[in-house]
Length: 156
View (spheres, one colour):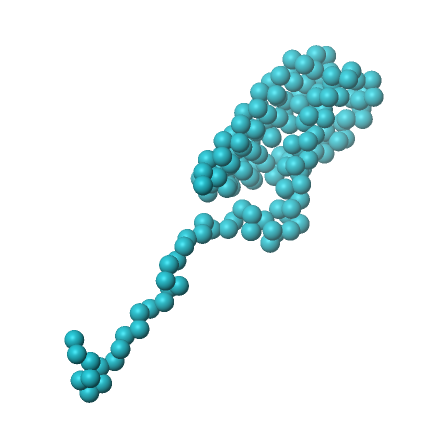
């Protein structure tokens, strides 16, 4: 009872929090340009992803579009971050900057894991996202049995 409301509120809370954290990263990163922009854009992608999850689970319109946007940006975004991180001087970063990156990696890993499940295990993806809403069919969808009137034996 009320599971859809709680799922929607939790995902929307995550998406708003992620967007606010992305804006906060712009100020916390200081002179670290890599972390400033990577943190902001990764947070925006996480926000779109969580809103897409809400739309998919609730079968709202726009869920497929947001899911396609997320998958189209997830792989190139991951590659860009992984290929440019070593040249950003990660080992000389301040502890605050490393903490910011760790906070971004956790939801990014969750989203990347869901994307891997989506493409490598499509039958699991069908069960999770594409299952139609269940409707209880009372009476086992059986047709009432009609008694035949043979030789006038049934009185009506």
